[in-house]
Amino acid sequence: MMETDDILKRIFDKLDTHDDRLNTTCNTMTEIKTTMFNFIDAVNKREAETKQNIENRYKKITISFGSISTVSVLIVISKAFGIF
Image (cartoon, rainbow, N blue to C red; front, side, top):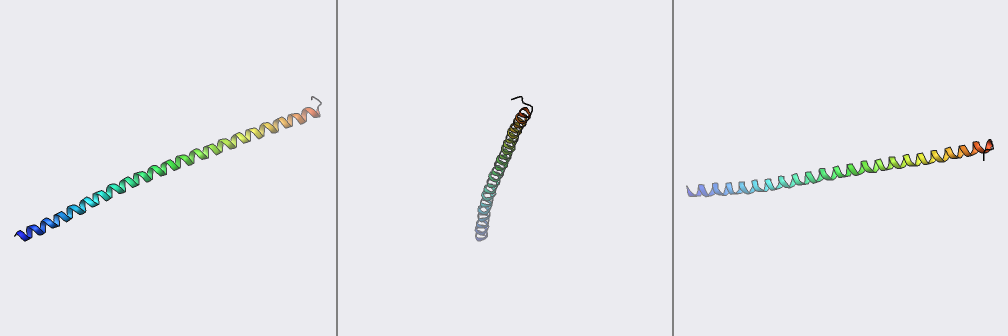
Protein backbone atom coordinates (compact mmCIF):
# COMPACT_ATOMS: atom_id res chain seq x y z
CA MET A 1 0.00 0.00 0.00
CA MET A 2 2.89 2.31 0.75
CA GLU A 3 4.32 1.95 -2.74
CA THR A 4 0.99 2.86 -4.28
CA ASP A 5 0.76 5.95 -2.09
CA ASP A 6 4.30 6.97 -3.08
CA ILE A 7 3.52 6.45 -6.75
CA LEU A 8 0.33 8.48 -6.47
CA LYS A 9 2.15 11.22 -4.59
CA ARG A 10 4.81 11.39 -7.30
CA ILE A 11 2.14 11.51 -10.00
CA PHE A 12 0.29 14.32 -8.24
CA ASP A 13 3.54 16.22 -7.65
CA LYS A 14 4.37 15.94 -11.34
CA LEU A 15 0.86 17.07 -12.26
CA ASP A 16 1.15 20.04 -9.89
CA THR A 17 4.50 20.96 -11.44
CA HIS A 18 3.03 20.77 -14.94
CA ASP A 19 0.02 22.77 -13.82
CA ASP A 20 2.29 25.47 -12.41
CA ARG A 21 4.32 25.53 -15.62
CA LEU A 22 1.16 25.78 -17.69
CA ASN A 23 -0.13 28.66 -15.55
CA THR A 24 3.20 30.47 -15.88
CA THR A 25 3.17 29.95 -19.64
CA CYS A 26 -0.42 31.21 -19.93
CA ASN A 27 0.40 34.29 -17.86
CA THR A 28 3.44 35.01 -20.00
CA MET A 29 1.39 34.64 -23.19
CA THR A 30 -1.26 37.01 -21.81
CA GLU A 31 1.43 39.61 -21.07
CA ILE A 32 2.88 39.20 -24.57
CA LYS A 33 -0.59 39.54 -26.11
CA THR A 34 -1.31 42.69 -24.11
CA THR A 35 2.06 44.19 -25.03
CA MET A 36 1.52 43.33 -28.69
CA PHE A 37 -1.96 44.93 -28.75
CA ASN A 38 -0.61 48.05 -27.03
CA PHE A 39 2.20 48.27 -29.59
CA ILE A 40 -0.20 47.83 -32.52
CA ASP A 41 -2.52 50.46 -31.06
CA ALA A 42 0.39 52.91 -30.64
CA VAL A 43 1.54 52.30 -34.22
CA ASN A 44 -1.99 52.84 -35.55
CA LYS A 45 -2.31 56.11 -33.62
CA ARG A 46 1.08 57.29 -34.87
CA GLU A 47 0.11 56.38 -38.42
CA ALA A 48 -3.17 58.31 -38.12
CA GLU A 49 -1.32 61.36 -36.74
CA THR A 50 1.21 61.21 -39.57
CA LYS A 51 -1.56 60.94 -42.14
CA GLN A 52 -3.35 63.94 -40.60
CA ASN A 53 -0.11 65.96 -40.59
CA ILE A 54 0.46 65.17 -44.27
CA GLU A 55 -3.11 66.17 -45.13
CA ASN A 56 -2.72 69.44 -43.20
CA ARG A 57 0.56 70.13 -44.98
CA TYR A 58 -1.08 69.58 -48.39
CA LYS A 59 -3.91 71.91 -47.42
CA LYS A 60 -1.42 74.62 -46.44
CA ILE A 61 0.51 74.16 -49.69
CA THR A 62 -2.73 74.30 -51.70
CA ILE A 63 -3.83 77.48 -49.93
CA SER A 64 -0.40 79.06 -50.47
CA PHE A 65 -0.36 78.24 -54.19
CA GLY A 66 -3.95 79.42 -54.50
CA SER A 67 -3.05 82.72 -52.84
CA ILE A 68 0.01 83.16 -55.03
CA SER A 69 -2.04 82.38 -58.15
CA THR A 70 -4.76 84.83 -57.12
CA VAL A 71 -2.23 87.60 -56.48
CA SER A 72 -0.53 86.85 -59.82
CA VAL A 73 -3.83 87.03 -61.68
CA LEU A 74 -4.75 90.29 -59.94
CA ILE A 75 -1.36 91.78 -60.87
CA VAL A 76 -1.77 90.74 -64.51
CA ILE A 77 -5.32 92.13 -64.64
CA SER A 78 -4.31 95.39 -62.93
CA LYS A 79 -1.39 95.82 -65.37
CA ALA A 80 -3.73 95.12 -68.27
CA PHE A 81 -6.08 97.87 -67.09
CA GLY A 82 -3.23 100.19 -66.07
CA ILE A 83 -3.98 100.24 -62.38
CA PHE A 84 -0.31 99.69 -61.38
